[in-house]
Length: 444
Image (cartoon, rainbow, N blue to C red; front, side, top):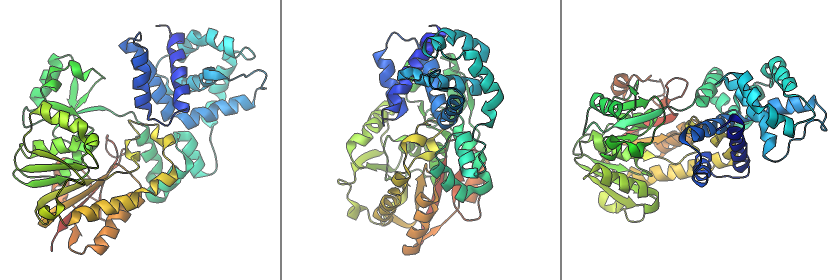
């Protein structure tokens, strides 16, 4: 498909995204399903462009706005989906994923049809001369917000926590997420799985911290993979794998996964336990665990029981669990690498709704932990209000629990220990999604 047609689909998808609160990946899935004539390469190009634009949305908007301000409105007529064309070109200029001159040549006619009052070469020259200066505000929050495309409120909250690390953190969150797999070591070794995938035409490299992880060099159809169908691996970010590895369940233990959802961590816990003992996976309703049920059947797992918050008999379980994992619902900003539209869908007021829910889930599950057992709290948020504050308030009211940083385990995994006892998987320190983890032991 010609570049102009590819870009036409990009602009169309951008318009749909702008008028929708649904996550971009779901919108893109529906978009491609309705346009079955698009080949896999075309879909990949369109998806990469739209996600790249979302990742840099505020900056490319600022670029286009400054360009518009230097040209009269009768020359620039952005309307319909074509109003996104200058944004696409600004993104292409910044990304430099292919020769910029070739992109401009392929879009000359499209530009001329919709912006007849100004030559595309004028925009190109303006980008060369001015794009690097866009957003050079004296205010550090605004400067970081425009330069790295984050809303000011998000930058402000992160800067209050991470200070001089903030810009590196924003850069880490803006990196494209890797395609990461978790090998089921209960069934196959990582090296053997790597060879199986290579035989299927999928090249991988081992992850840096998780002993079960592999990184695929490119996207591929997992349903065409016989190794996937056999349950030899799952798709799971390395940061998510590290949560289970830090929780460190043992064979034959009783484990409660209190917020199981799709079950990525549940399955990892099972693999670490060699399919022994018992895992009770819990969530609000069975609909949320529908995917987990299917994954359990594909992997022929025997020790996982599914329950809802209503059906779980907590009274019967009092003081019996060796490990309770609370992978709490949260704002999810640690996942921005793979879902850049979180930056624009998430509102600051939404963040403030989570702490009370998170505290409630900890309280709801604390009494299930047996003496000497562990309560592990994790989120994929980077905000203190959802992490440190929640845990410290819980510990202040539940004196029988103490914070335990598993330094030896962290050293094995190549993770950095911190003096306050919490574990932070930050995207500029590790090539993963962002996570916060607190390990608490019940001593009384």
